[in-house]
Amino acid sequence: MFARSLGSAVLLLLAGSLHAAEAQVAVAANFAEPVKAIAAVLEKTTGHTLKITVGATGRLYAQIRNGAPFDVLLSADTKAPAQLETDGLAQPGSRVTYATGKLVLWSADAAKVDAQGAVLKGSGFRKLALANPKTAPYGAAAIEVIDQLGLSASLAPKLVQGESIGQTYNFAFTGNAEIAFVAMSQVLEGGRLKGGSMWVVPQNLYTPIRQDAVLLKKGADNAAAQALMTLLQSPNIKTLIRSYGYDI
Image 1 (cartoon, rainbow, N blue to C red):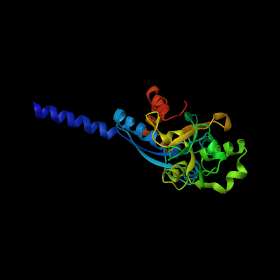
Image 2: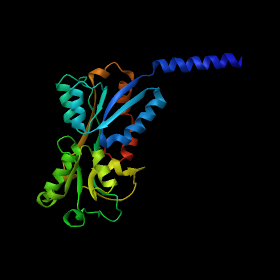
Image 3: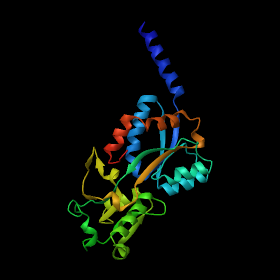
Image 4: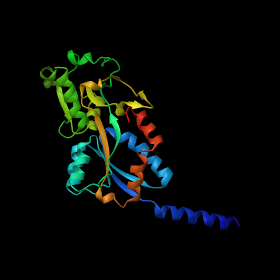
């Protein structure tokens, strides 16, 4: 009897695994940590898995245009997904906003960044890191902030660029730059600052960083890709995304 029951359980597991799919997902660097948590939920609830590639939105868009085999794009802006629809590379009507990002000025030094961002006007740092504004929306937002504060000329000699917001964070984390404009999601854990010091940049200083996801043509018949797009809109996942400092 036990052997028969065990055999039935194994058959059920095998049947489930046969229906499980894997989706290749291109993810903007600011969302690298949240998407790992989302992938875990997806696998636990559906059996589907994600193969995740992280990078700057502009670079991911270029890779998709050049034939990269992604099923879904989680962008850091609205422009790239909209353009992919225009290009005929995305499923019409599949685009959704999954988060609105927040920009912060951050340092690994707990005493470096004040709550008003006045450090930007002083001489207490040599290097300020930001993501490449041509390929990374958070980098473009950082440039907007600098311009709005009237600090373009004074900060220009101190600027260093990362290829993505991920590399930008690493510049500050390793001390190669004392301060950096990064995504709030990179410095929070469980809704609290993991370490260092930060200034939450007022959102009136930059264009809202609305982040869209889109199902690509290659993923149209991929069950894992479709399940991911559905999961992004679920209440529990929206709560998870908020815990990383995003607005929904």
